[in-house]
Image (cartoon, rainbow, N blue to C red):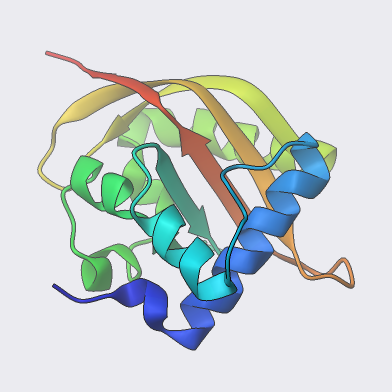
Length: 155
């Protein structure tokens, strides 16, 4: 099994993701003890979903922990090449875009619910998700993250 969290760029991204979450939400997403490498491993192996995308015009997923990879039924290489809009069904993409724009303006949103779809066509309802802007220490916007623990598969 590949250990993606050991890649220096992934370790750095995890720090931006975790720091930005703490800045916006005023809580830590997870235990931040240990080195950045230890934190990257802990985040990757967390039971809750964590995913993020960059700032491209059509944002591409750039991080998913193992729980996210399992939920969307993708491996790491497939996940990080996928436009994030493809995590939602076509009819839900407009609503998803509005939600992301709202998070971009406000810095974060909480208690988001919406229908998503795996790469294999399995539909699931996400409940109580938090979406937040990811930034560098100088404030430069570099993406958006999402986390949630509650979802259920739909018929």
